[in-house]
Image 1 (cartoon, rainbow, N blue to C red):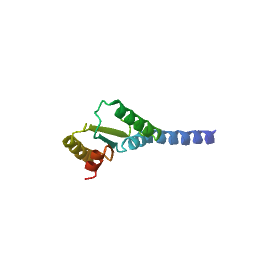
Image 2 (image 1 turned 135 degrees about the vertical axis):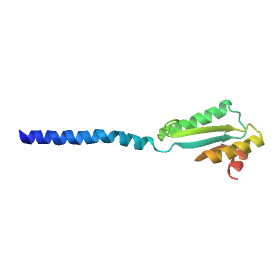
Image 3 (image 1 turned 120 degrees about the horizontal axis):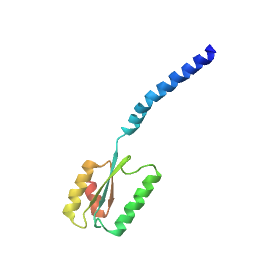
Image 4 (image 1 turned 180 degrees about the vertical axis):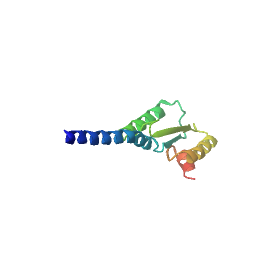
Length: 114
């Protein structure tokens, strides 16, 4: 009977240690840095259906790779809608903010590369 009690005590001690460590493991997982993806379009307006469809497809593809907005990735959307000054300004903003920039349109791409 003492042997059973000893095993039980060891089990309870191990279980207690594991339970105490759970919050630390959860905190370590949560502290992973949020990644930022900048989405810059030169020629489409923010509410353009084609642009929205492209972004939605991109977001779906990322979800399949376990990237989800608000969980481990944040999207920063900017559109120049054909205005070169806005495109230049938004490209500079995204270069400063984002880890990765997805640019649509030759003007947007050229400003992000400067």
